[in-house]
Image (tube, rainbow, N blue to C red; front, top):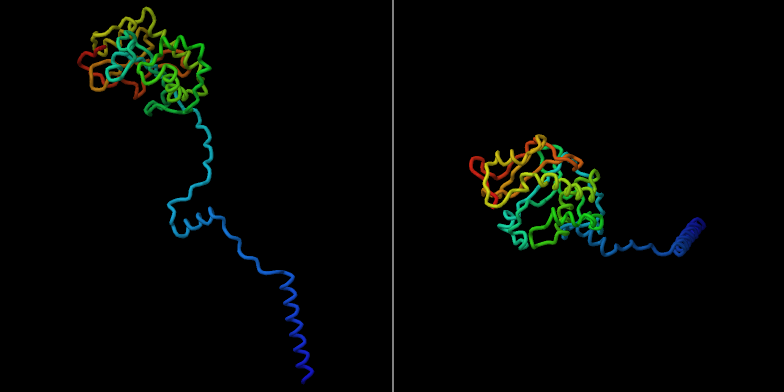
Length: 264
């Protein structure tokens, strides 16, 4: 009996010695890794809602939008004296007796929708139209003192013209605007002979301007007044020819139908 008890004691001592040896060999149990401060903050936000939101550390760059779906352009001509009624214009523009270009604006293919805007923002490159500056200064001057001609062209391209990409690139876009202006404002055109203080019925004015049966002219007046502010021509998809447009949004705006309208 004593021998069996002795054997058990020896086995127990051997087991303890073996456990100690294994513990020494393996080393102390490693502590759980500590979270970095930023991750600890995120975890705290998720568990206690002490932070309103956890935003990513960087913002992925968005892919460029696809080119807008458009069918025609509006060539919009403005009467400087009407525009300058409520704007601080350059002195030489307040009495300017000729329509100038406001813009060449793509219109949505679905003619019941509003026009596309800012399709390729900040894509303007003035170097590509340096050879067009003379023609643009003549046909597309900026009226307001708030910006130079170049800044006006940049604004119009970024807001409207960029929506014609890739079909009509920047230089052809501005060249087309000059060409179209010279067509509708040529030496024998009716609008070239218009002067201040003349009054018209809308339908009579449109008939006189539409010298080509394929044209359709829209007249836009200054809000709630009888003053003509803009004359609009519809232009084909390539911005090369004046065309007729009959979409639901292709209509006169703000002009009285039964009384005369006036060029101030």
